[in-house]
Image (cartoon, rainbow, N blue to C red; front, side, top):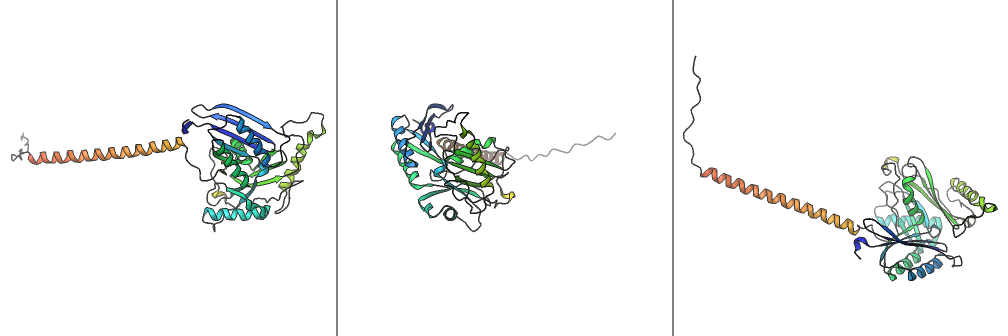
Length: 344
């Protein structure tokens, strides 16, 4: 299969749940296959869901494709890194972000991989952390099944980038994702994303692991709304260093806006800016299509320059020939007398 039109496989990993979809790329992308697997008896933690993913990849047509993976927020940590003029390199900014995450979540963050979102100078950026063992397992699994790992994103970031075109761009807002046992919230100001909090709570009642809601007569019907309201109030009123949520709540820090409004990224067409954050490793590279278009553009530019050079040389040659012809012509020594007017 040509790398220009290589199929893509989308994978979503959550507690006891794996979703897979395969899309044929091309001028008109086509959905080839999609599966949603739920294993209520799977072991808790990401090790159990990786075992389920290994089983599904071995049984279906998921090889020879680019893999894009979205990981549930319960295995991800977030924070906001303010801009600092004292940090001059990407390594220094990453070390500063790791120190900040260790101060919030403890020394256990040494075994986690960090990824910083792209942001212009002077603006705060988001930092996200994911277990290094989980990322390494995903890399090994995709390579073992003939897949090229193109992207690994947290659920909150992937969902925000998908729905950002319908979010109000002129008002401050909260963007929230809810899953089994946890809630992730991204606080956004009118111009840019300025805050991100990760709040894990006890299992939220009313929605089972299969996504089914209770019957109308069940008293647990109102529990999700009540739980979300309490958690939203606790996050909104939380002081720096305060524990928010309930159950196994994690420490969260409110994110002040450290960037001046004039330095905030410009918005186009009323749409909020996308958050460029990925754990796949390395910088974003051009696709095969983009590389081909870039090569064609460079080739066309070189051809135009060469053509101008040939035209210039040809013009210079014509001018030399014309000068030689003029020198070879005999000079006219007879001057034409000036015209005189007859007097009346």
